[in-house]
Image 1 (cartoon, rainbow, N blue to C red):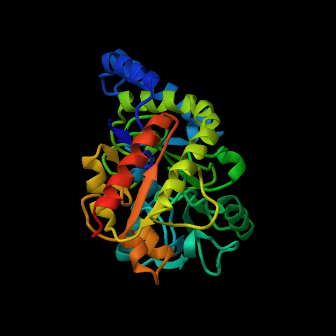
Image 2 (tube, rainbow, N blue to C red; image 1 turned 135 degrees about the vertical axis):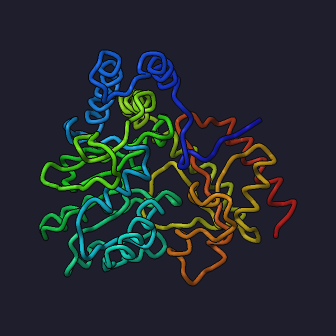
Length: 364
């Protein structure tokens, strides 16, 4: 039996998403920027998807910029807003952290980094001299829920623009970008039952965001490159079913708690603050996390050691390392197991049995 417990990396495609993408693949093959009938037909799929995504996040369609995924959306949100001094946290996804590193290298941007010890974020931010804040809403490795609503309100009062990485928040939290009041917010289709290769950046009307890609005036000049109507059709359908996904979250959290209780016999949970119910991250005593992931994969249980974009690198979890700088073994032994609405009780039974077999058999 195969058990998929890596939903924070990518979620299984919902059946209605597969159906929409199959239909779009046959009908929307032309370049959507072309003025002829075939181009206009492809364009209609994109604009329908834009309307659906906008409705799901409380936005106007014209304020939604489609991208090739969450990483590009984060890159555009970080690098597209002019800044001299940026504030961020120590636990950001590489899509944000590496974009900030690029801004430091190419523009000489100064960075203020806020620590999130043990997954507990500060109530207030040190905003002196800061002209852009870049923060995630839900942590990709531990599920820590950062106080973004409070931070955005604080920044708004101080006149500081805020970019929010909401890729892991979409489908787990109720989101209304207009009510939130941030300057730009990034999303990814692959976290809500949609396909890889589709993302979006919502941009507030009063925020100027410069395109980071050259070669075209697509997306109203905010993102060059021909969008993929097929992937975006899937994104739109997935977004239109967010209510169903949100309604399933209490059941997902209950299963996470059951899985976590079994894991606690072998280690400690990484992260002590508020978190979403889709993931547990445990430091498994006596194990190297990457090797444990490989051992569980042999048993048919698919998990991760950290962010999927860092897979294949036998290195400590950067997020857990930042949360517990004085406890190196936590980052080295981190195991992330993330669930979704499709996770069943039978999946948990099989996963718990496999974990017991593997952990008791060998520790390294």
